[in-house]
Length: 91
Image: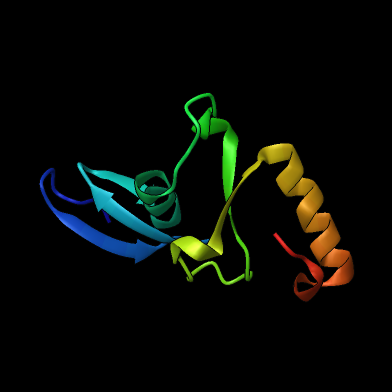
């Protein structure tokens, strides 16, 4: 469902991530939270980064549960999590 130009609402996408709709576009809630409240270095290309949920719960969008990581390192991280379990990962 598309929003009208000046409406704001939330839903969950097909992968289970919360989205915030505004200006007729969906924005991933965890990315909005991180981009708004975290201290991102100016030299970081945010569009080439992933926001990882430390505890594995993709609905837990508290800033302390979000971790900025490069796409290649995120892939490696998930291979490690798949092999050893999320409880063995410390970020």
